[in-house]
Every structure is written in C-alpha cells, then in structure tokens.
Length: 244
Image (cartoon, rainbow, N blue to C red; front, side, top):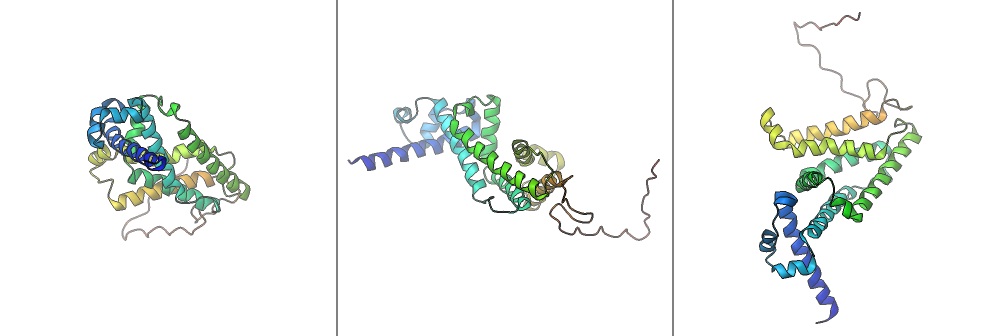
C-alpha cells in the first residue's frame, strides 16, 4: 500500500473516533463519558483508539478543538470585513446566536469544561489562536466605528464579544428550565427571532450611546425611523407621573 492511501485511512479513522467522542462528551461531559462507549459508537477496537490518541484527556482536548473550530467556521461564514461598523456588529450578533441554536452541543462542552476550570482548553494553543483572531477582527470593527463617530470610544473588544455570547449562550443553555418556568417554548421560531432582535438592539444601543454621531430622537441605533407608538385606546387616560 502506498503512503497516501495509508495516510487517508489514518485520517478517516481519526475523524470517526472524534465524531463518536464528540457525541459522547456532548451528552455526558468529560467525567461522564466512557472510552468503551466511544469505541462502541465508532465501531473500532480499543487498541486502535489508543493508537491514535494516547489518553481520554488527549481525545477530549481534540474534540474541544473540533468544537471550537466548528463554531468559529460558522461565524466566519458571514464575513465581517468590508462592512460598515453597524452592519458588521449586527452580523456578528446574528452569527453567534445562530451557532448556539444550531450547535447546542457546544453549550454542553463549554459547561463541562468550565466545571474543570478551563484545564483542557489551556492545553490547546489552537483554541486560543482562533479567538485571538476573532478579538482582532472585533477590535478593528470597533476602532473603525469609533473613528467614524458611530460608536462610543473605548469599548473593549473582548468584553463586547463576551457580552454578545452571554446573551445567546444563557438563552440556549437554560432553554429547558426557562421554558418550563415561563410556560413558553423558547425554541419556537418566533421567540428565537425575538431574542435575536433583542441581542442586536441591546448591543447596538450600548455601542451607539454617547457616540458623536449617535441616533437622533425618533431613530433606532442604525439611523432608521422608529415606528410611532400606537394611539391610546378610547376611554383611557394617559397616566402622568409628576416630577418632584
């Protein structure tokens, strides 16, 4: 057998193991996942698994890398460079929330890794490089918006991205309990769209507050005219709160 077919077979086996491991880790976390279950799902021998990965921990780190890379790929499918600052942030909000919606296993993996205080992420330079590039992109958008006068000055790129992620992450990670508490199916299309709009509006409102060229009264954060409030119902008086 030539070297190229052997290499392709090896990569194919690794992909099969990683796919099986991702399902197991996403369902049960690092501590709950079992190597025997991964082997059974991948339909390989234990010796073959340990030929490609020296330990359960190394396999978990590789699955984490695969998970974070998939999330970043989804975000990068919507290019941010070349867009106006407001449009770029809107796209970033949309892409980040959509990733959590379509890749809910990311939530489980992140929860599990936080239980371990980021110990495994710390062992992967790949993950840190992925987010270093993202932070640089967001920072460039913020500085561009600041120079154009549409964003407030001094916004930290990492802090902003954490805030955008938190608004989507919490919604999806707690969807089961919150749906029960509020008797609302949070994964229904109209509620997802409503929350997507909330994330965008809250982020843009924060960025444009105090900006030299911020929205004028009667406009939203992107300069669009806001709909007039509905007229008061007949027979109802408008409540007036006196200022003292």
